[in-house]
Image (cartoon, rainbow, N blue to C red):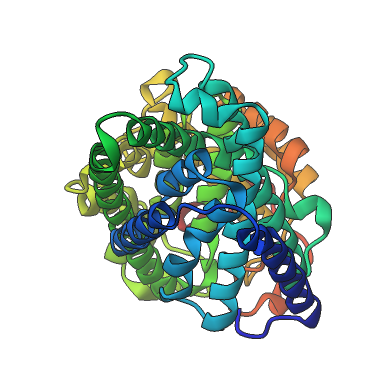
Length: 438
């Protein structure tokens, strides 16, 4: 964010002053400058490597500094790496200063917590397993300071209420920082052993390899997202009256999947299925998708081919997994009256039953050019009425529970929602336009 609010700038200034106070003891304490310099150079190199590989922050060296050095000296280690690096976003100077002050305070707090529990002596004596106790306290202090400061700047910069700025940040950060803490502890123990600093630096090699592997995964995931985004944009351009529908169906599918207790990987696949369920419309003539009047039986049959078109389009995209079958079968009905193959009951893949409920729900709660959106409660009642014949009752119940927890924010998807009619027909007697085009 280029325009930083004045109160956020004041907050940054206060954090910078606190960081300077943290560094003041350098003038009165005995500082092992060669250790500080070596760790600062290593951290700067690791930070550069981490940014180049899109792997995120790299904290083992900073935590090793917290385990080896007095608080003020340890807090000095991140400064060169942060202040000399590119921030990547504007305003760059302010962001670099903020990151430097934040890490100074976090490393200083970690070092104080570690020393307060006798961690320095435990590291020198290789006193295991006790050395894990002060190291764990240092990791907690480091994580708490980082997340508290992040939450504060987020709340002020984005004008977000305090109760929404912090939730989840600490718990999400603790596990990865804990892994970094173990690597930092190994570095510190080897540094103080007869093997010396060279052996300690070797600990970073497996960390760098794992970071590189993570970066490859990150790039592959980004490529997947780009592929899906391009397909969805193509559908939205062709079928403008349902613009945004695919994204919302993906969101509703994900809510149902989570409520059913599916694992994270499968939840993500169901999200992809919801987003891409109508990708086959790219093979349907645009004049049919945008036709104002009712569809003829022949036109309806053409539009009903879109699940098969979609399945063919994504057949070779391996990461979609069972999303491909959801794309093919999301218009099947439990009573066997759906299309394209007239499957019934459990013959319909579970993923397709999830997407079918999500698709119908968003179609009813979104304003279209020919009718107004229904209230969420009315749409749920209609889904429940059709459960058992058209929809899987488990999926309908899961959606209802998810909506109770998280709510729903329907959106206008028509190019001109103002022309919507004042009422809408029941789902079971929906027009060919409604049923085939959603």
